[in-house]
Image 1 (cartoon, helix red, strand yellow):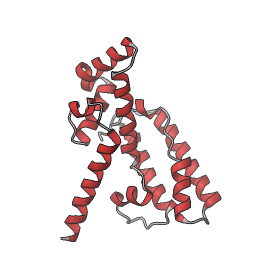
Image 2 (cartoon, helix red, strand yellow):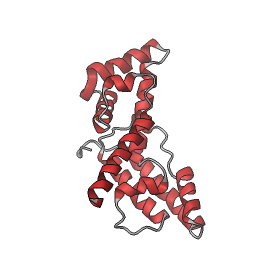
Image 3 (tube, one colour):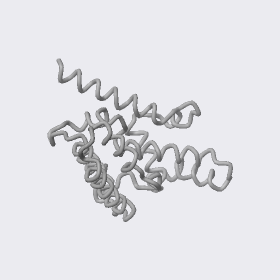
Image 4 (spheres, rainbow, N blue to C red):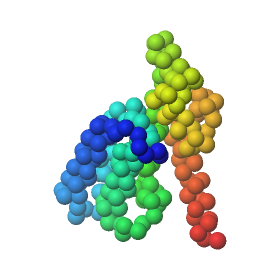
Length: 182
């Protein structure tokens, strides 16, 4: 992520809401088992309505990701030194940044194939011609680069963004585990 981007009040509001929701789960259900608390965390604390339009290189989004990792450690009563790459496996969900990337990519693809010719033409122009000067194009390019995916892979109708992200994440995790075990 690139820092120094303009701030987003929507992301800041989401951060505050997220912290309040996590604190409520911990306050009211803190004595329950970790499995129950993580289910409650996933159900009540991970909604990000409208995140498809966020700037994925915004510094506030990096702050939200940090707060998510700290919250997962708190919900599961893990030590602060628990490696970040283990957290998605322990809570059985994608990291918040990858979840937002997936939602963004699904949104853009639905716009590219939308029934309205206006929506479709604006989306295609943003992705093909606007690229880094367009928020949509910039987000698509950032996601394609992050997941080492081609634009043709993204456009193919059989392509599942979430399956690809999970495959990429678990491949990275496998390489990390192999590195530390050898």
